[in-house]
Image (cartoon, rainbow, N blue to C red; front, side, top):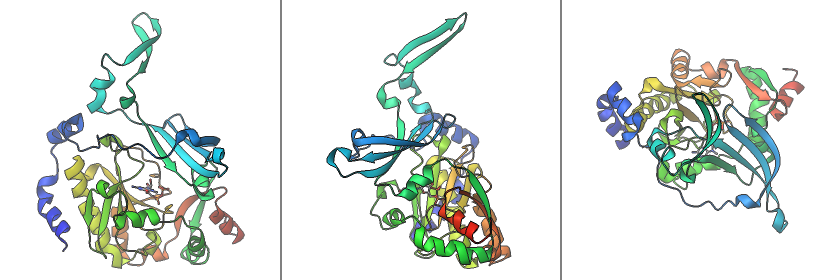
Length: 336
Ligand code: M7G
């Protein structure tokens, strides 16, 4: 057993937080969320000109924008910028509500009044994700469209999906960069280095790590060549069990969230075809956690224990966007 695994296993019994400890940590004194201001970005927002709003949601307070970069120097490239208002953080409430925050009255009626609060910029963050240069496929990924359900049989996977993926899937270079310690090294939360059954646990880039309410991490398996749920057999059980057990312990230790408050699942279809598992706070309505996409890791493990070829044999259902070329392939094959 690798050292990292042993160390975690030893500490497992003492790692689950009691309700009081959890309350204390979540109320702001201990949960290890990222606080340090990051370095300045080299991406120049003033060189980004908006082409199209791909999607926006008033409820989620997010907007997905397609734009061009470099129009001034004649070499334009596509970029996708995602803006998202972040949840409040109990730790920074005092600064948000202090005398330096500018509170303007909007209306007053009897005991009721509404206001505009303009906090100091440091406490008014907009989480910003940039994909640059973005491919046509990235732009489509974020474009709001009608969805269609596909029931993919084992045969469909072999004849339609798999050949399509070989030619069309997104690059997983960012995944290799994490595994090879070329990127996001300081963000790694836990690693089991075993090349067969190990994994790296790291905050998902959807999470700004400022508050645990929307906690989102991913476990990326060390092993290459396992593309998705479809590839899993009993041979992968020990890796999946490591991810489930060690991932929960690592999150409990670091963020004080017990395994019973985590949603741990795989996407099918994923966007990136190197096996990874999503860990999100159960109380957070995470994007991509709907039934037609999310497969609970605990159920995946049990299915494989019952039938080692479960995911090789089963029909798997997922939704595709109207202009997804894979949907076109299914249509051509008369399957939609
Ligand atoms: P997925 O199920 O393949 O696709 O999950 P989805 O993006 O449609 O959910 C991949 C996960 O990896 C997503 O939750 C992404 O937010 C996350 N992710 C993608 N990229 C490119 C990065 C990255 O560079 N770093 C980190 N930490 N997470 C990423």
